[in-house]
Image (cartoon, rainbow, N blue to C red; front, top):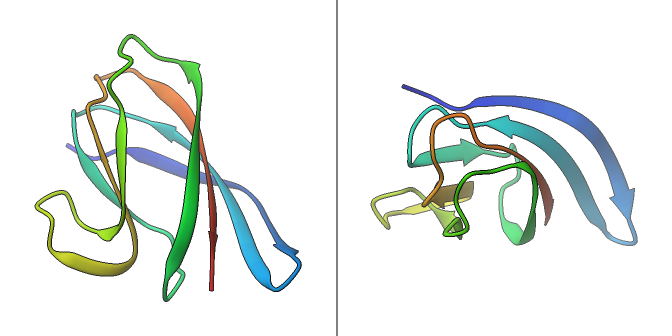
Length: 89
């Protein structure tokens, strides 16, 4: 299973690139490749979620292995929908 990830917006804020994604989960964990070489921060905004235990790991995959430019999402449920705003280079 994989998350459905769609790009909502891409812009520049100061000297950082900012990407907005809309994510629909169909599993509890997934690694999202952002296209950045390094993710500096990320913000998760719920749209419709049944859990409150979502966690983000920056520049790692779900197993904890270094994966620059990725965001690992854990603790979500199938059907959860959220927005992910990612700042990076």
